Length: 257
Image 1 (spheres, rainbow, N blue to C red):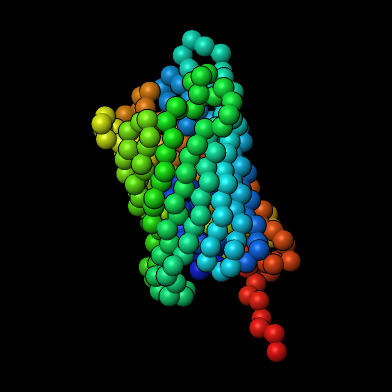
Image 2 (cartoon, rainbow, N blue to C red):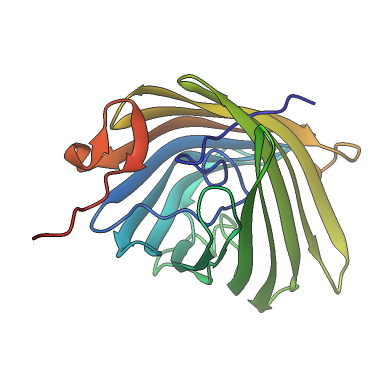
C-alpha cells in the first residue's frame, strides 16, 4: 500500500477521492474540480464524462457545494446511453479546528435530486433521491496526514445505508500521494462495495492542480463490484491572487489598523 499525501495546507480528502475532508476554500474563494470518473464492472460501466464539482467558501469554515456529471452508461447488448446525472447540493461546516497539529472536524450534509429530464426513464439515474449526513475528521500521524469520513444516507424510494472512508498520505514537494479505503453499504437489501485506491495531486502552479486516482473493488468483480475505479482531472483555485504560487493554502486576510 502506497502511503501519501498532504501537507497541513492541502487536505488529502476530496477529489480525486471519494472520502471528504474538513477543508474549505476560504472566504470568497472558489475550488472547482473537473474530472473523468470511470466505474468499470464485468459487463457494464458508468463514467462521468466529465464530473463538475463547484465549491465556494463563506468565511473560514463554511463551504457551499454543487456537483453534477454528464454520464455514459454502458450495458450488455445495448448502445451506450448518455444523460445528466443527479444534482448534488451540499453545505460543509468545519465546527472544530485545533490548528495544524490538532483535530479538525466537520459535517457535510448533502442532497441528491433528479433533474427535470428523461435520465430516470432511460435508466441513467435511479428514481430514488437521497439525503446524506456525514462527518469528516482530520489529524496528523507523525509525518503522515490522515482523514476519515463516516455517514448515513437516507434514501427515499431506495435502500438506505452507511458509508465510510479513510485517506492517509504525505507530500513530497509539489507531489502529494495518498492511499484510500472506501466502502458503501445498503440495507434491505444488503449490499456492500469496498474499494482500495492510490492517487495524488501534482501542483503545476496555482491555481491549477492535477488530480489522479486508480483502484479496484476488494470483492470479486461482477455487475455490482468494480474491477476498476478512477479519477483523472484538474482542480482550479480561484481567484489566483488568493493563493501563493507555491502554497495551496488561501492567504489569510490581515486585520486593518
